[in-house]
Image (cartoon, rainbow, N blue to C red; front, side, top):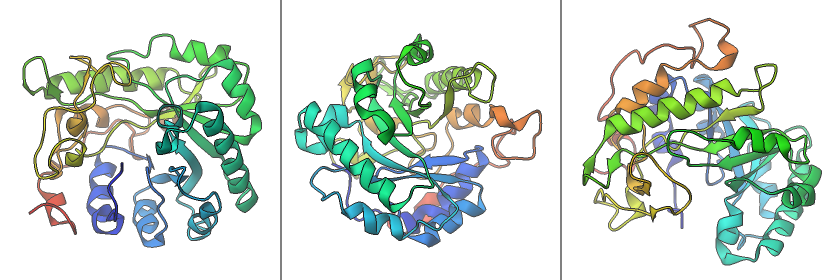
Length: 312
């Protein structure tokens, strides 16, 4: 279960500043952002938002209307997102897959009725099969795939091209954590290696290239989440465990509280710097735009402690 009372407003200025140093140009939320002031800050930093407006099947479908209309006129909203790994979690209510996919279609249609100008995305755990993409059809405009494959995505891009759909895809989650459970200690070098390898693979398959098939990638994640295991005040070296939703380099284990490119206080890890050095495909050799191959202008550490609601 995601934490309640998320303090987007308290953290956005600090977080947007740090993300901009890494060249981040889009973020995906796991809960709705309905505060235009939050979007204003992100927009000023050149960061678009994939705004998740429906994530829990306990909510009536009509709740998307209020969530969308609150920010629908804001230019930072790139697309609307319905669901996160709903094929795994049954929209967090353990719905059967057949029920969950019908709920997805019905919710997407409600989203479309409110705003027909933006794409609608859904986030799937790993790769849907042919029957699934055919069933969902045109109710979803773009598929996000949460995929964890150590140092390479393998045949993922080729497999997507074989599906009976013309819908684009993007990596909605990928990456590695900074804890090595084999050694029982942090391992920033391994996280940086995986970050570099996987991100470069996404760039190589970018739809900016003539034969590319991937619309982009959202690395998981910006900052550590200490709430995922044990006490929120403690940084645990465990999580979902081995092989939960794929394989994470180097130990094939999801150490859930260590996925951040920065620590919870904003201190940059090696993976942050590795990510920042990779140019996005649309840069065309320039170095003046976010993500265009420039190293971070400064180190960070401790900034997030000043944000409202952070641990002292």
